Amino acid sequence: MRHAVLALWRREVRVFLRDRARVAGALAQPALFWVLFGFGFSGVVDVPASDGYLAYLLPGIVALTLLFTAIYATISVVEDRQSGVLQAVLVSPQPRLALVLGILLGGVTLAVGQAVFVGAFAPLVGLQPGVAGTLHALAASGTLALSFTALGFAMAWRLKTTRAFHAVMNVVLIPVWLLSGAFFPEAGAPGWLQAVMRLNPATYGVAWLRHGLHGLPEAIPGSAISLGVAMTISVASAALFLAWAVATARRPLYG
Amino acid sequence: MTGPEAALRVEDLGHRYGDTLALDGVTLAVAPGERLALLGENGSGKTTLLRAVSTLLRPDRGRIEVAGVDAHAEPAAARRRLGVVFQSPALDEALTVGESLRLQAALVGLDARTGAERIEAALADLGLADRAADSVGTLSGGLIRRTDLARGLLHRPPLVLLDEPTTGLDPVARDALWDALDRHRAQDETAQVVATHLMDEAERADRVAILHRGRLVRLGAPAELKAEVGAAALWLDTDDAPALTHSLMEADGLDARTVGERVLVRTARPEAVVGALFARADVRAASVQEATMDDVFRLSITEP
Image (cartoon, rainbow over all chains, first blue to last red; front, side, top):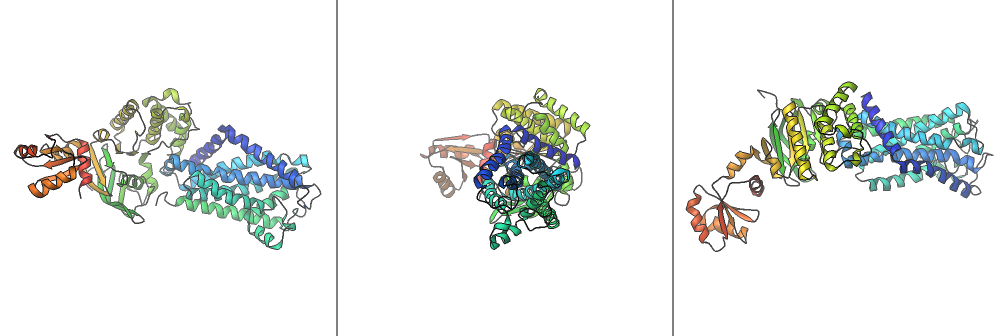
C-alpha cells in the first residue's frame, strides 16, 4: 500500500508541475490578491498590530493559497472519474485508504509548497517568524491543507462534472476564507458575525498560522482564540474531514 | 461447481436504479481462456453487468465469483484476479506511457523489478517500445488504446473485462488491438469478456451473450446462435414490414416477425411457402439466407 500511496502522490505533484499555466496561476493569484486587497483595504480594515494591513493580510493570503490549492487539487477526482482513471484505481486491489491518502498528500504537498512561497514574503512587511514561528506556520499550513483537501475530496466524490465542482467550491471557499479572520480580524466584527466565524473550522487554522507568522506573540493578533484552542480544533477538524473522505471513498462508485 | 474453476461465474444477478430494472436474473459462467462477447443495446444492462463484476457497483442480488473468489465477500482478492479496460482509456494525458504503466504496477502491487520486467514485455508486445517516454496526450487513438490495454493486463489476471475497447479506432488500429488480444489470450490463458456493438467483433468470441432489458436472452457460440435462426429462414423485403408480419401470422399462420425493416419467416419447409410468398403484391423479394450475427442480435431483442 505504501508504494501505491507514493505512486498516487507522485502523480498529483507531477501533473501539477507539468501544467505551466496552473503553476503560473497558482503563484500569481496570491501575489495579486495580496497587492490588490492589501493596498485597496489598508485604510478600511482596522487591524490591531502595528505592522499595518499588508502584514496583517499576509497570513490571510497564505491561508487563501492553502484553501484554494488544497480544494482545487481534488478536482482531479472529478476529472479522473470522467476519464476512467479513478475507476482504474478503484478496481485495483489497493485499499480505498491508499487512494485517499495518495490524493490528499498530493494536494497537501502542492498547497504547502505554495504557502511557503507566499509566506516567504513575510520579512518584506516586517514579520519575523523566526525558526519556531516558521515551524508553527508550517504545521498550521499542513493541517489546514489536509482539512481542505479532505473536504474537497469528499465533495468531489459526489460531483459528476468539473462545472459542478467549480460552482460548489466557489460557494464554499469564498465565505470560508472571508470569515476565517484571514481578511479582517474578528475583534472588529459585529457579535453575530463573530459567532459565525467561531463556527468556521478555518478560523482556528488561520489563527494558528498567524501565531506562527507573527513570531509567536502572547496573543494572536486580532483574535481572542488561544493557541491551544486553535491547535486542538485545527487538528480535530482535519481528523474529522479525513475520516469523512475515507468513509466517502468506501462507498461504491455507482448506485 | 465441479471441474475446472470458472474465470467468471455470475449467478442470478439483479439490480435496479430507482425504478429502472437494469439487471434481471443474469446467470453465466466464463471458462479459463474463453472469450465471451457481450452484446446489447444501450440500456440493456451490459454496463451494469461490467460494473458489478468489476466491483464498482454492489448489485441488489446475486453472486459474482472471479476465478473462484466471491467478489462481494473478498473484493480486494477478486480485484487482484481482474483486469479492466474501460470504454474510455484510464490514462492521464499528462503522464508518459512509462509513467502510466509504473503507476499501474504500483497499484496492482508488483514489486519494482517484476513491474519493470512486465512493463518492458508489455511495451514490446504491443509495439510501444519506442513510446515509453512519450506523453500519453501526444499519442494517436490506437496507441492510447494499446497503452490502456497494457495497463489493464499488466498483472496478468485470469479475467479481463473490456468495455467497447475499439471505440473510435480506425480499421487498422482495431485489427492491431484484436491481434494483441488474441496473442494475450493464447499466451496467458486469460478469459476475456468483451462488451461490443460490433457484430464482427462478436464473431471473434467463443461465445456470445446477448442482453436485453437486463435479461440474458441468448448465450452460445456464434455458429450455434446463427443456426438457431436457421437456414430455414426466409427473409422478405417489403415496404411495410409490421403490416406484412401481421398478415402472415394472422391469415397464413406462419411464424413471422419483423426484424429491422424486413420480415423473417421461419419454417421447416421454405420451398413449400416461398412460391406463395412471391405471389403476394406486398413482397418485393424473398430469399433463403444464412443468418448473420446481426440477424441473431436483432431477432433476440425483438422477442416479446
